[in-house]
Image (cartoon, rainbow, N blue to C red):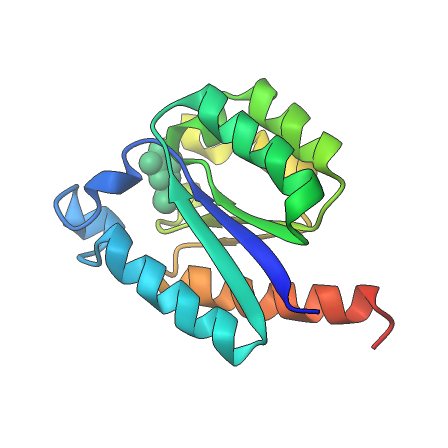
Length: 150
Ligand code: DHK
């Protein structure tokens, strides 16, 4: 069975490439989507890659993942630091979760240094730009293999 991984992106990540490139890099979200598809394929995974600026839509997708996907990779953008609703959805999903940030949130504003998402995450990758998504897919493959007993 090919494992399906939801790769979910929160607010303002549709602006990548234009948005503060010194912090977020020059890759567009479409570039990252392509890199994720390749990294998934190399690991025998398939991705469903989505972005929304709307908190409730992210909650709906996480609820959907519970029955449709085997893992979630999430960059919740600014909701990382504010959203109990997204945390609750992740905890209810009972799936491996990898939290990704392009920037190193620990070198930035104090308010970015707390993540609600981390309370539900198996692992966190930050500060490595778009590469972090590829690393997350490698790690997800390992987690699913370990879960299957292999
Ligand atoms: C993306 C955002 O939009 C910010 O609100 C977070 C994260 C950091 C990132 O580094 O990918 O604070």
